[in-house]
Length: 139
Image (cartoon, helix red, strand yellow):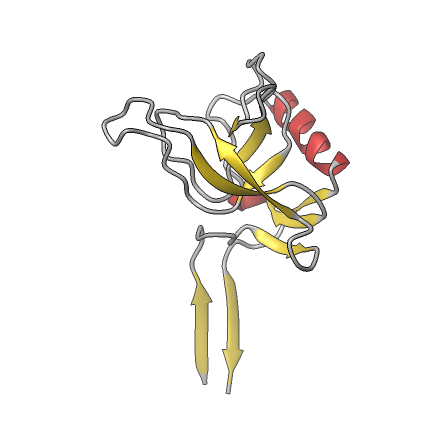
């Protein structure tokens, strides 16, 4: 018997299911920042059309959850300062995702997270409580 174990997070590892083709995903511009963003980061779209990590205290548009980052992006300069805008891919509609694999802002309140989850649900992104480790067995 062979046991295969999937370790998360990895690119797109938070996705349980999504619409076929590229219907669930969009290529976006992630604004320059001071932190590397990882798969599963909950994102918002700013008024200028650029995307940033969800920040309930923001006033540029990314205070509302609009999608989830699919793969790691590095908008830094490598030394902890803001670098350059980079391209990324987000799931922004028609998907199921694992709750434990989502990355929320460090200081998000329960009320703000509930609001963000409702915003994602309004975009047909369903957050499911499922195991983060997938084990398959074959004989």
